[in-house]
Image (tube, rainbow, N blue to C red; front, side):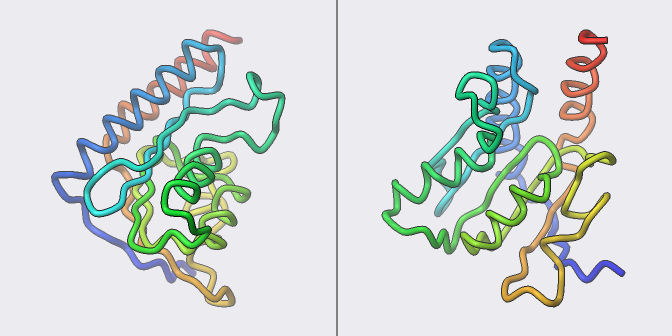
Length: 158
């Protein structure tokens, strides 16, 4: 049963998701899985990244993790209160867990991930009532464009 706090899309969500899509395109151009993330605070971007697992030889170098690390440095605090994380695809369990640790209050993502999504599709980490933090979730922002990037990336690799 899903107990998520479901949010609604706002006009700025589209613009910030477009920025995340640009990060995903840059990741794809570098041979990485095209996932992009942007973290905002008070309506401005404080961190951004695309996937860098291959470049960094780091299985944890997902776009979300890199953006969370950078944002923590920017605000000089591992707690990222009053922020919103924009991601092109539904975060995995590792990234969702990091969001809980950082106390991200709001997640906006594009496409669902039926194979590894840990927000709504496969697991529901962010809305688990046993955890000490809940995240407001807005899903499906520019979903078709986000899904197309991932699907075409993997279609070319087959």
